[in-house]
Amino acid sequence: MARSTVPVSPPPYDSSAREMLAERTAPWPAALTAIEHVAMVGVTPTSIEFAANERTVNLEVAFSEHAKLLEYADALNAGLEPSTVGWRWSIQQTQLATGAIGAGVGGTARLTAAWR
View 1 (cartoon, rainbow, N blue to C red):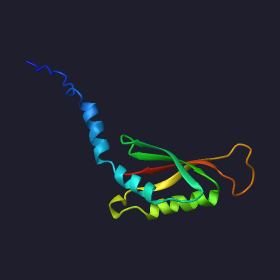
View 2: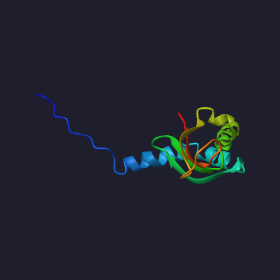
View 3: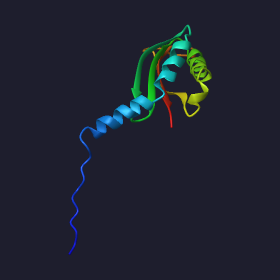
């Protein structure tokens, strides 16, 4: 006689519990600390978004010069604690200010930090 198998459904609120655990174990305090400690004239953070399920932090900034943006990204990475070795900030997208042409012109950028 063949045994019938009953499908096992996940416990109630399983996905919510996993999402909460991912948020709790994410290194978001280190990301906030890095952002708070890297104050730079010419670069202004405008928004931050944590995506624990994707294991990323997205930071939107406004910048006055492209060179300042590069300097800011380097400063963010230099300020990371040894416990955050598994991730680094990188510039994902930049957009020049409307009507801006030429080197050194400001705009907005999205920086992303991803961890393992």
